[in-house]
Image (tube, rainbow, N blue to C red):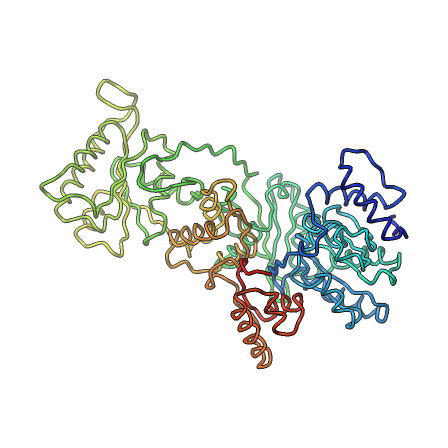
Length: 608
């Protein structure tokens, strides 16, 4: 068990500066000065170039005030605060990044002191940015730690003593946050370390309690009885359980995706079979209802996902567009529909709303068919008239050498081109399949027509119904389970250094939008976000207003007036938050906290 060392702050500063100057490879040992936990944290802090300057504290302010970790910790923190009344000890809760998401002040008079140390909701205490501290260090070290006075790496925290413990997910055992007890250095007590450990354990137990107790308990009993070697997953809105095989595939993003997909299903029986596009597998799902009306779900995957078992051909070049990731988000259901339509020798009509991904699915299917050279892609609205049939000659030439032809936006096909369309279908049907000969290419060519049936004139619909087997592409709003995979591949189109990713909360925002513009709208949204926030983890606040979780509480009249005053001060200061805080007569940390509480959005570019 670690015990806090009573070493003068000056000696601690000298030892830390000596370690910084001599370097991590010097072999110096500080066991007489600090505990191994603190020394290891100092070394990690130096290794990542953490800062000892007060301005290193970043105001992140990106968390859900109604998130499950905050709800699980609320009663625990309130109980400890009541028990420690009069002892000058305050409590702080952080998420897995080290950002403070809740605090309880043991003495209101000490609020300004903690504000001066940036110990307020929204500030990041990650060890990577501010070094050794009672919130970030337990996350990095995965164990409880006591940090006293100048043992803190950042000088802003030197007046404080803090004990902290990591909070582990009760199922996956991953670190999801930390809990810390803090006080003035003259009030610290060695028992604070045991208190932090106990509080962390209590929060972990509360995390389990917040799940649908009956449903997940039943799910766990089924999980223990299951002999399946494939992944088995139990989940509700707030929690997830899995067998060993499922650990490799489970993530917060998958939990968000599955929950949104399952809660939207229409249940006519006890079980259903669904597709999980992000894993490229099917799953049998059973709904489990508890007596309180909540639902949980038990899923058994058809097999253990193996990304290496789905090789892809090279993507089309010169196809008139950027089809990065084509074939990646190609669900089994769509593949089966294309396979059935492709059993015949004639044309295939791919039908769907504008922007639904008809071309994406077409290229994905052709890409997996070993269908010869990259397809020739033409837009029907750009085809020449009767006097210039170059397009028709190009298509016949492509078919003759085994190259598939894709005619897009067939609803815009001129009436004058209908006979040529029929002729192309006839050319595809008459072309022999089989190994290459002196007159035949090695693989069959396909004629694929993409169209929006709602916008098609009758003369086009009539001809298409005669010559083509139909494949219907659903709207994105009807197949939201595709969103995570599509989103990942649209974001992956950026250069590695600029590649952005989605946080679970941001992904949830995408999953809950209705997407009237279908896949095209999703792609445009993500490309815009990627340009605006290159190389970042995209958070809910980064999303356009219509995609954010707007369930904020209604402000009182007094809060509305205060909000208007802060907005006006920010506008008057040109966005400089330090100047705005001074003009309002409040500390900068207090201003940051009010920005969060009152829902005032400020761009990152604003000066601090």
